[in-house]
Image 1 (cartoon, one colour):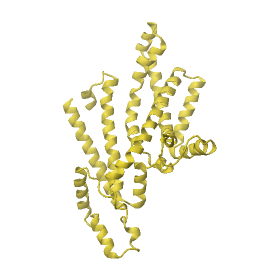
Image 2 (spheres, rainbow, N blue to C red):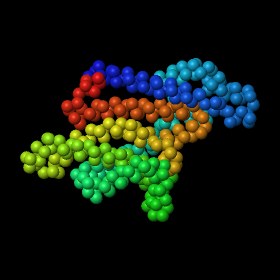
Image 3 (cartoon, rainbow, N blue to C red):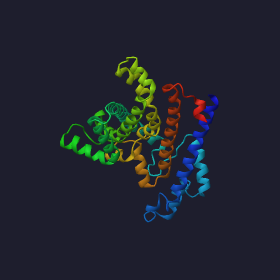
Image 4 (cartoon, rainbow, N blue to C red):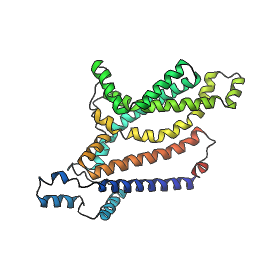
Length: 310
């Protein structure tokens, strides 16, 4: 097990290094720099001083090495457009809001996705199954940035049930959480339905039915536990994405999360903010995928770490 853990940790570090390298390279391939829009407003000497302050006057290989050095020290650097706050401070301030909305969206998507998928599988080829599949298709077809204005229009304007904008109370988090949860809920429903149909046709399920075990207990103890394995695989990137915020939805609802800083960083060409938020998201993603792999052995004891590591 220790060999497997060491191998996975090394793979996580390598993955993060590749992401940092690609993001750094792509970011600097774009012509100009963060001060290009101010070149006509500021004297040349001030622009030179600003570029020197943020090491933008150094050759790209040196800028890359300096950034890797600060990254090893867990310092994501200063924000170019915000003189008083660093990227670490922005992520610290924004992660709480993003995580709150993300956790609520995960809970809604998991609960209703597993519920609808299980009900659809147990009522295959009936109107219940068709209704669940229509919901799933709509959830996949309608992106979150379309769902968000619809929720605002119907649940905040026409029927003022929930407030919008900022995150002053838990009520402000309901609509962005629903907007984020709708797509994953639909996908989980489809995955769960397909997996549940396959599991309920297995021989051990028929054996349990022949023994007279109630269908409810069979579904709970044997069906869901085995059908949920494909969902666990899908949940890794989903959880990471929802916990770190969905940029457009946070922008629509004016949620002060990581997504807001990332979008502002792109518009302002704030290199440290773009790199820092990307690195943070990637670190969360690889960590959760690693934890998901470990979770497999608790869900299904037949799965061994050594076999998954090969």
